[in-house]
Image (cartoon, rainbow, N blue to C red; front, side, top):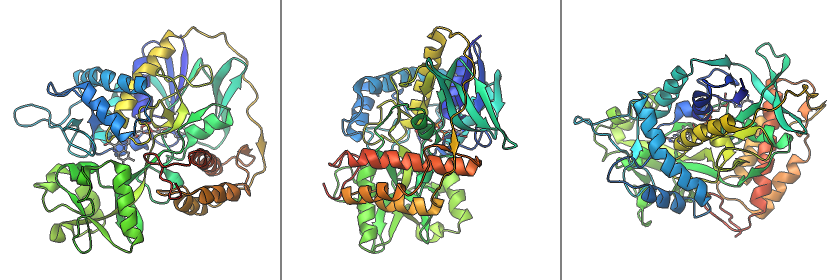
Length: 481
Ligand SMILES: Cc1cc2nc3c(=O)[nH]c(=O)nc-3n(C[C@H](O)[C@H](O)[C@H](O)COP(=O)(O)OP(=O)(O)OC[C@H]3O[C@@H](n4cnc5c(N)ncnc54)[C@H](O)[C@@H]3O)c2cc1C
């Protein structure tokens, strides 16, 4: 029986595990508990053309338009076509999405979709319910929680295993026939972000240290509407709120998106830049919810978050917002089966770059990517020939190293790798990073130090890719272009 190590238990890792568990020995590693991941936080839902009046072609066109045609056409076609059958399979397995009184799905609308096609669960709690549903299906896997993977083990034949810190902080190794990187994105490089604390670019950093190719690292999506109080972010206000009739205004009630053809449902990069300009001009930005009937029942998770932070939205119908880091379009380069540039190493979900998101992700396409490509990675591993056992190689060398403070890195990244970039700023960022050593693993080897080194490595990859693209495209905006 093949053994497969999966790094991460978000929707991507869980879906791959689900389709592997009967035929393989599956071991899932998670940095903290299995619920600590971005998948649990997803609000809006999952986009798929499953309504009889919808077509995959329309979903495909919307995905390419939002991605500014930078998308890989083949991978995107796979996403929207397989997405229909994979969502139907999930529903047949028992996953419940919200329906109206007549039993029809209640499709949500989000930015840059031509029609409502977002399936959601318990209003704005889709990620939590779908991830927990998938975890319940994983009855034949071995869980290794509180185990941070710190390196990939490789031989001449490819990836043969991992090195990790066990819950007691001791270094261990584990080997397998295949390793799946499903370690999520890198939002925590930035100080304002919607991302879970575990999301520190580990997947990209593990790959880089092992010499595995990345792609599209310049494309970081900044979501326009994070709940913001006194300059600090307290989670996401889903685009579905604008889909339901919310609109953006400044303190003078001037509508900020009125001049744009798709107004408040313009692509995220467009809205994020308009809001940033308003901020830079000294304005405050609010999301008005006065036109949304039954806001509290439609968005129970957002309502609870607003109450937790004493936002007086019931009195003034306003939510204070500003943009922050949300999603990584780039990542570990894969083909349409999740194969990376290293044999026996696969990548899936936000860690991977299949090319489906192009220069800017279409809303609610990432959970769909986790489902579609999670299943495809499993199929590719099942179809691959079994490899002969290899001796455990020596883990990568450690070194004394010097790291910046995390807040220092985040401030620099926000200023120089953020919503608007310049060649001079990107060069400054890379020159600043040169004062530190983060390529090799730290000799003291604490989880915090490895995480900090990973953030530096992922940030360096963003800066290098952004510098190579002198013109603005999608989420990569150059103010000097
Ligand atoms: C607030 C919010 C709302 C969103 N809303 C939507 C939405 O409505 N629709 C949509 O399509 N997308 C949405 N997204 C994006 C979507 O949730 C993510 O892109 C998707 O869930 C990523 O899934 P994943 O499995 O790739 O990674 P994650 O769910 O982030 O899981 C990563 C896993 O990797 C593990 N891990 C990381 N590093 C290590 C390590 N070194 N060792 C061991 N384990 C490790 C973590 O423990 C975790 O288990 C949203 C994102 C956020 C943050």
